[in-house]
Image (cartoon, rainbow, N blue to C red; front, side, top):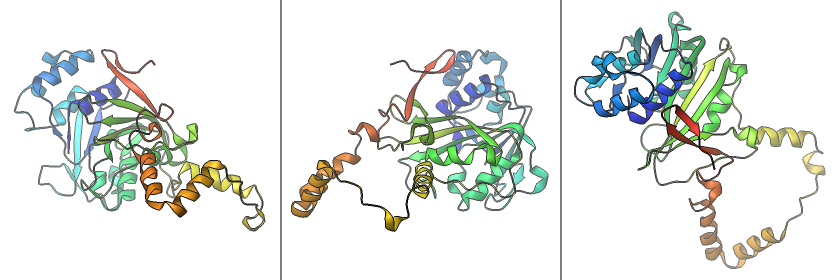
Length: 309
């Protein structure tokens, strides 16, 4: 678990956007991995003088914990929560279990830099993150989305966070960014599937992580709203308004469907080979080239901005 250069960039962007880090807690004690040169460059990009943060610019790369970086974000107090104190966490708690009440609503910023995917009872872990934040505070997460199979118990879909961090659960999702860990380290703003009325699946050759920024607008209800995938909810609601299933007429099938059926029946190997091309990165619908689902972000001295064109 730790903060690299691109995650540091996003946290600095969140701070510039108004996220308060005054009293912060990290889920798991986070390492800080950026080099001194990278850190100095990032601080200058975001209008900060590197000389004001001498503790951040000392020590070997990878040999520092992230508290010194959170101080640069404006933190006056930084706690760390972990299931063990082997790395010196200040709060020892198993995230599989509900949060002790004395920690509820105590923090301006709750940051998970790669813990929840390692917690089997991830629903409890996510709720704990939400409860740690005070009203008006934020939950910030960097979590695996694609090509991390075997890294932890889970990889997460963007849809989960759109449905979870909702007003009914006491939150508003302000920002969701997909980070492609390839040679160019590209960022994409992820659009809500419920708004664009389409899924946004990605098949790509590089690991992809999600950066989540969600603001707490009210207390998390005792019985929260269970997330349901948006397109299924729409389908259920549409069909509920139609005739009963036994009364519905089968939909008309077009020429494409008839051709697919013919190939599958008479040339199954060819059919399956052609079908594989649907689910590859050459298909715009299944890549970051799907501009309805993903908006490219540019890294500029003023922060992250949507790319034109």
